Length: 438
Image (cartoon, rainbow, N blue to C red; front, side, top):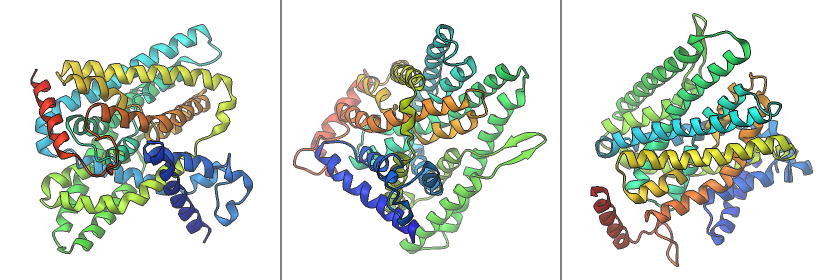
């Protein structure tokens, strides 16, 4: 009973605060996070009403619902995978891969340099191993916040399509960068070099994730053919994504190697394979989007509730966090700008894409769980928690402004943001096409 009350309170609180966000012209994602903060252990949760399902009395209570967050991340990745249709890949696949890789590498390099310099000035504040680990975590972008903003405002256009591809690629690149950087950090602390930990394990994880995702996508298509009613096809799709999420959480050890899967990568490839071999996938995805709407609200409310406000009391965490946020933001912006210039993207995309890559949440926090085995692991997690607090509250609004600046969200007047001004949109696309040719 208490669990059901908690879920209903989270949904109601998130949706009610979204009304206030609309009045302030803020994305709904920001309001969901604020609702989570209010229900968390540092606000309503502190009143001790968690026993009747109102608020969360501790971070552990929030963590007890983590399966909801895992499920939401799986559906988010599956949805993004559906953006990798062959038609779009032929148009901008090479650009997306180049930008996805370069902006992540440039961000990691800039944050690494900034934090290592901070180490040399104040060695007691941060170690070199923690600095390079944070640099790798900086590459990760939160696909959930970006996708929610795109959905809420029905954003569409060249930059939106490129953005969804880049965000998806970013997670795979971030995984490799983190694995390599974390392996180097462990070597610096222990003095023992492990090529398996630095190179082999992440490569195996990516390869197995690609294989598992492709198999699940193919299996979903084969099973879907046995059903013809819309409701049954929707049900089997949801069941299959849940199954894919569950399998991707399995971990095991072979010949001393820790083998696992990347949940995001598996679900993304599953969605990619399915959408490219199934002729009714687009219609089906429209119905899945409707079903997952409350799940995504819960995901962001719970994300807000698990933000630890006690980290704001630690001046050292704030110092490192500010350096991390400033230089990660610079890395994302200039990384995207330079890679867009290299791939001859239009001026509109060059100036705005980097801003949309700022949100950071689940993937980065997942990396910090691994990083906690470092000597400064607790500090690394607190710094990332602080950055997530800032980025998740500010990032969606910045993403919205960038998409408006690019002309891919029609500004809200008296019309609903869900109703496009098709005439204006066509004019923009024509203008964008001309700039791209230049």
